[in-house]
Image (cartoon, rainbow, N blue to C red; front, side):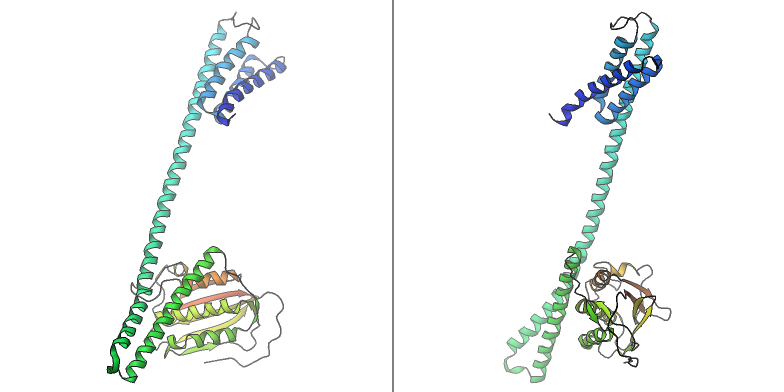
Length: 364
C-alpha cells in the first residue's frame, strides 16, 4: 500500500487513539478538555496528511465525541441540545485548521518553487558568464597562437628560396614561441579541471624555496625579458614540505602575471620571511595595480582585471589559489601604495625539516 493510501487509515487510527485516551482519562478531564484532545488530533492530521484526511478527522471526531462522551452514551442521540453547538464548533474549527494548513502547505510549495526558479536563473546566469568567458578565452588564446603558427609555417612553406636565413630563423622562433604559449594555455585548462574535480594530488617532499624560485625564473626568462627581478631570500629560510612541481607552478604563474601586466622595464620584487610558524612569500610588481574591489575577484576563474584583449584566459591566479590551498595555505592580493600589486602566499611550516646551511641573502 502506497503512502498516499495510508493517509486515511492513519487518520482513523489517530481519531481512535484520541478516543481511547479520552476514555481512559474521562474521570480526570472535563468535556472541553476532551474536545481539545480531538482538536489536537485534527491538527496533527492536517499537518501531516493534508486537507482530505483532516476533513475526515473532523467528522469522525464529532461522531466519536457524541458516541462516547455525550449522554446518552453509546448512541448518537443528544439529550442536551447545547452539545449541538459543541459539535458545530468542533467541525468548523476542524475545517478552519484544514484550510489554514492547506494554505501553509501551498505557500511553502510556492516559496520552494520560487527559490528553485531563482536558483536556476542564477545558475543559468553564472553558466552563461562562464561560457562567454571560456569562449572569449578560447577564441583569443587558442586562435591567436594558432594563427601565428599557421602564418609563419605557410610563409616558410611558400617562401622557397626567397626567405633569408635570418628571416627563416625568426619565423621558426615565432612558431616555437607561439607553440609554447599554446602549451601553457592548454596546461592551465587541464590544471583547472584537476582542481575542480578534486583530482590534484599533492606529493610532498622537503624543498628549498630558493630552488623553486630559481627554477621558475629560469622558465620565465623569455617572458620577463629586460625586467629586473629582485629576489631577497634570507639564507636561513627553513625547508618547506610541499609538492615542488605544483609550488613552482605557483611562482611561474605569479611571474607570468607580472610579465603580462607591467611595462617591459619595470622591476619585479620577490621577498620571503617566516612569521608565526608560516612562510610568507610576496611577489610585487610596479604595474597599474588592481582595480578597486578586485583583490578577491582576481583569483576567480576567467576573471581578467586587464582590459579586454589582454593576453591570458584568467586561469593562472585561480590555479595559484587552488594549489596553495591544497597545501593548507592562503594567497591574497593587494594594491601597493607606491604603485603596482603584491601577491602574498602564506604556507604553514609543519613538522621538523632537515637543517639548512646558513647562506648569505640572495639578491638578483
